[in-house]
Length: 178
Image (cartoon, rainbow, N blue to C red; front, side):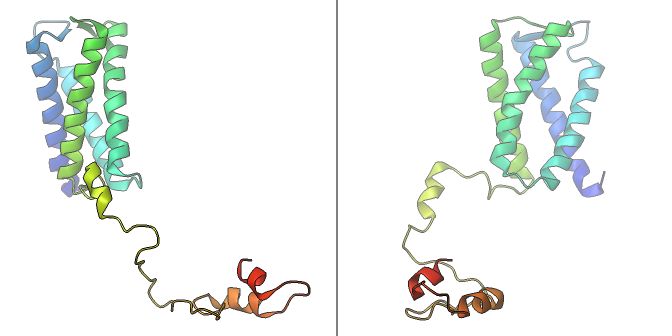
């Protein structure tokens, strides 16, 4: 693991262990044994944090997609753990899943914001900042805008070459759309 990925991974593991400890203290879950949080759970959080940090740095998916996947997948992992007998849910399943989903959502959003992906997790109000259809558009570097009546301006040479040949039975307008 690169040195730059270690602090975020350790923070994620610490936050996850803290969340599990809070759930255990609040009476939401109970791990078998005498300790508040068993060592195997700490190890699971460390492994998850390493994998998740790597995934966050290399994935091309937006941060909100990753956060949503974790929000849905996290509680499922706890349900599987309860089914296997590693822990016990002390409240009704629906309440436990709702609380776990909220906890996972908060941790994942904070993690992705901390990793510098805040430009991909935007509030809904940021959608108003986008240009409206028909409004000003950005031009690609090195490509001149098309002028009315000049169907070849702004196209790459290969497209220009193929469009330059007249075709029998086609008007100039139908050649442009090809």
